[in-house]
Image 1 (spheres, one colour):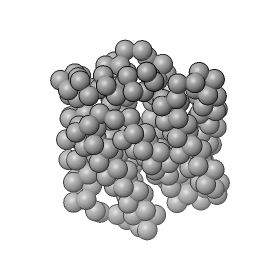
Image 2 (cartoon, one colour):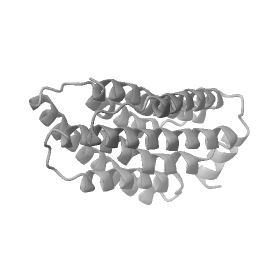
Image 3 (tube, rainbow, N blue to C red):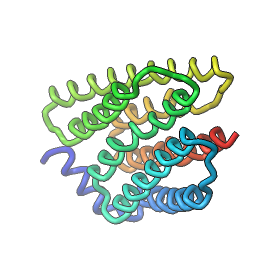
Image 4 (cartoon, rainbow, N blue to C red):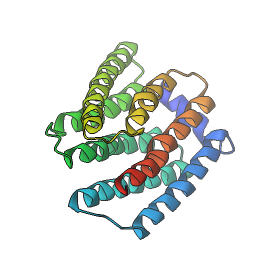
Length: 214
């Protein structure tokens, strides 16, 4: 039987596990964060409004993904979420720099982020070890490139007297996603991914809003 089918059977038969508990909490908290953002629509300029719109879209996608996972634990929900939200997370950080004069294009980093997540999906649903290794190697190389671009953006922001903890959400949390992929215990694996998701989206959003409202 293919590995991803075994995983889906496990997920379907463990509704009271820590996976389900963390998914429910993430769903509720993300929903409340989204409502707060929609109510508090105080933006100072068009650039700030663009960041706010991207942030709301990010939370909306995350909420719908969590809602889907709370109904049916399926990797497809998770990876579609990541294909959309990883570029959005980077986009909000890039916009902070662009509104201060940063001139590097977002296209390459956005495509790299979406492709990295898509390769993760291919690796998780494939049973050919050679293909799995290929997909994972390429996705890790893309992650290295993404983190390099984050480093450049952060250096620019520091030069503009904006020093925040935002880049550390990428530096620390994103490599952890890749490491968790290799955990064999499915309950631990998916629970950790839920926690990382909440930190990299929910907590990141709170920090981002505090930065743009300064």
